[in-house]
Image 1 (cartoon, rainbow, N blue to C red):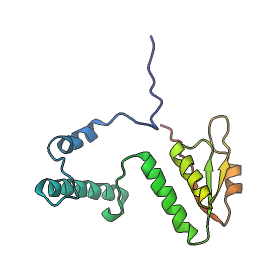
Image 2 (image 1 turned 90 degrees about the horizontal axis):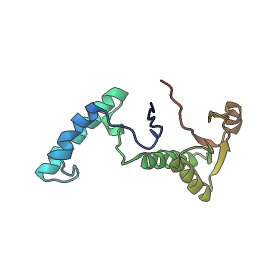
Image 3 (image 1 turned 135 degrees about the horizontal axis):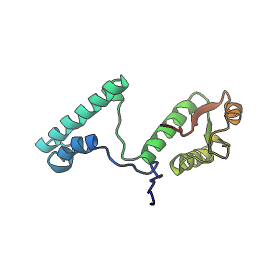
Image 4 (image 1 turned 120 degrees about the horizontal axis):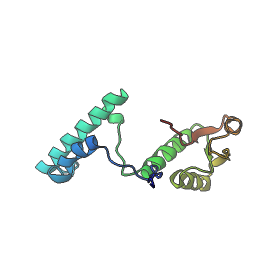
Length: 154
């Protein structure tokens, strides 16, 4: 008997039933543009703001601190570039990452290198685990950020 194991959860994962249930109205009847001033847009804005408030409660932050992006690549780009540009103003232009990061991270780091940032790519062991001694050695007083994926276990 063969068993199928889906191992590409970095790309996409099954949607939980709770999320499907919450999204059904938005996908079927409440599909307005939340930036529009017409009735459909205002209704969609109320739903979007409600979602932002619920998420903010979970993270114990202000709803204005919650941003929605269209995908992981956009999120990676926004986070890395935003932090890098902010820290550049403080004279910190060094980034640390690994050679096995997602292309969204690697390509963003490559683009930042072209803008004058330096990037250190630390190694990983045969299991893909970051070599912490290399990571520690790579961080300097010029390091703006460290972009390393987190391995989770269940």
